[in-house]
Image (cartoon, rainbow, N blue to C red; front, side, top):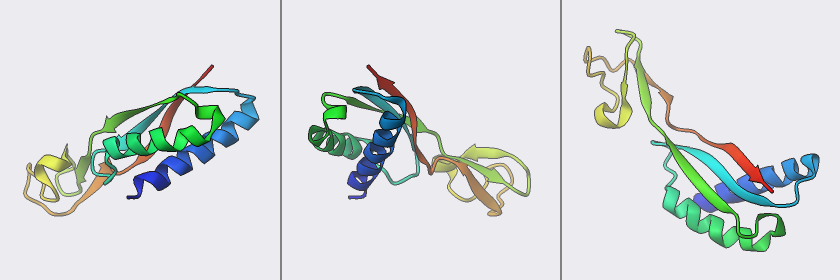
Length: 114
């Protein structure tokens, strides 16, 4: 389960920001999770609930996940399409000369501090 490692990385990153910005409490963290990132948001949330109990800065904080749609680009016809629906083969021209534009990332979008 790599979700726990991701949660620890998020916590470490926000703790550094909190020190720089003199934050005393984090109420919520919003993250963006790519549709094909292999990260399962419900697992991430379960790991978050467990991990934040060990950090006073995050006590009672909430993790909010937002999905980033997976979009693929076709280099032959120069069009984009839904990755999950069509996979590697372009539905416009049938080419396999494609690459993922977005949807594989996991990133912190917003930190709400109080």
